[in-house]
Image (spheres, one colour):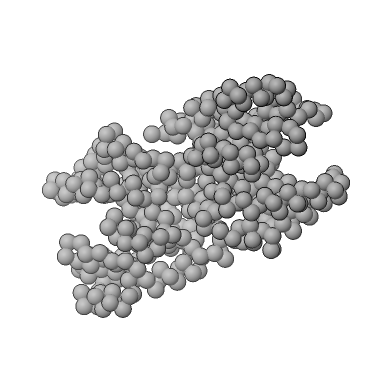
Length: 206
Length: 206
């Protein structure tokens, strides 16, 4: 039984601003066994964003039509725009035995977990709130107002970690360690008996 | 928060004859973060066995006295002899933040899980029963009677895998992969939110 013969894992990946999700995802995606789910959204593309790569950009009507046809694995509305995960792509990736990474906010994460209880929920955190704040200010690219908004959001969202399965810390200069931790989690989950309830049967049959 | 500041994991490690437990344990024990628990037993030492290394060899009276003083983490009687895990050593290792490997039969494993619900239960299996049988016969060191006994025991014990947390396969020439799998499991378990219930609190405090 190789992992290629098995359905991939659905991995929900959340983390506050400054947790370094992008770097960790990029590291994981260098490995062929991982795929990234491109979200659909109704918000306008930002300069440089490519349709089908950064997001699937949809009109509000098209998005709602897809929801009503049951074509979204999950979706949420945030700041007046819809964000969602197309179900068909996700199912195809999982059926190929690839692990699907969904980078998603806490509310969307809960929606995924309800629809896919077998999803693995991982929260990526900076080493501490103090470090996170220093990182956000250190970027020097955002207004004080924006930074305060992000920190307020963090205070609201991080306590949801209790409903996640794993917490991974992204320490200074150790994004690679966070990616290694996620690989370890994924390997362990594929070996979990609750995902291999037929292990004894298979053992004697083969 | 480094793993050294945290209590180590108690790892229950079971596997039928021919699963290659010894090789996998030896690989893990090359890493300073792992310790092996030397069992106590009332059976007679075999040629070459060293007291305190292979087993703590005790008289029946001494063993029973230790049990009655609550000094055994678990014990079982098997073929007329007691086998048990000294509690004090185990506690010291865990308090040091080291991961303690208990190589133990299924019945003893259940006893450990009852006493230490936080224990991680891992069953090591050959790729299949057919391969296991071939391995046992291939050794050429045991009587047919002994081989049949071991296989009967396997048929009785492997179904208990459903009560374990993880199943790890030890494939031909891949003992190192099995050890890597166990390292991944241990890493993942240390990141499990259920072992880090105070993650959010710590995040904001530090």
